[in-house]
Length: 312
Image 1 (tube, helix red, strand yellow):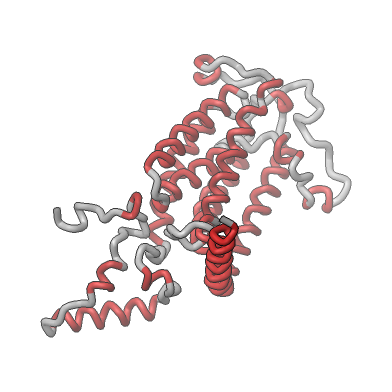
Image 2 (cartoon, rainbow, N blue to C red):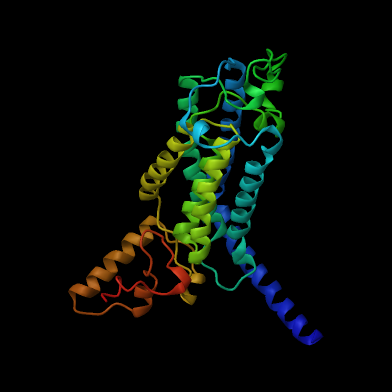
């Protein structure tokens, strides 16, 4: 028994080391994109902090969701935050699963470059929207009579730049349209929908996204319009940004698992070589066809080939 455990631990350690080497190489090539995405996350937090100084409390606006959904109350507001934290943590752990499990479908660095691109585009639209019109916040700490409804004038620039994380994020006001929690939730669910392999988890992800939407409204953290706008805006952003991004390399074959993504020049050269073979009546190596079993970077569920792609 101890021998078996030792052997499996050795295999796991070798797998982790090999994956770490691959990811470091990818990080060396893509660190600028990751750093830029993280900087934009800070800018988004800074913008949300800034609009809090402009927020003016007032009567809560009429909202259909407030009429239909019972109010959870201030003591139960943690429920939506707990669900969001579970979704966030689960997605982060999934992006690092290639370091542990044999079924490697994604590269961690490349998937986070993609996720950050979706987040940055969505958050840029969000910043423009909530600075265009400041609505009175429906959250409890944003209502009239609350000391947190409007921030006092800052005494120094450093006070603004530090954002007061995480309290400043949790108790923010004014950054309403559209919901930041829904941006993260939808980006994570859509990403797993395209690159995950478990159908049951995909279905669970969409169920949790709908549940998160209802909890946000029931907690009075956002108006219904904030959630509705997030649903169609994030999906459209992902749809259009996805078209501009290169396809993720396929890791379903042993050969592709050892290769790093090809540059645009290499891909063009390879395409010309394949066309030249076809024109001369030569066939293309079957291994090359196996590397193209995904469309627009989409991983097929449970590793099975799509029947439509095989002409069936």
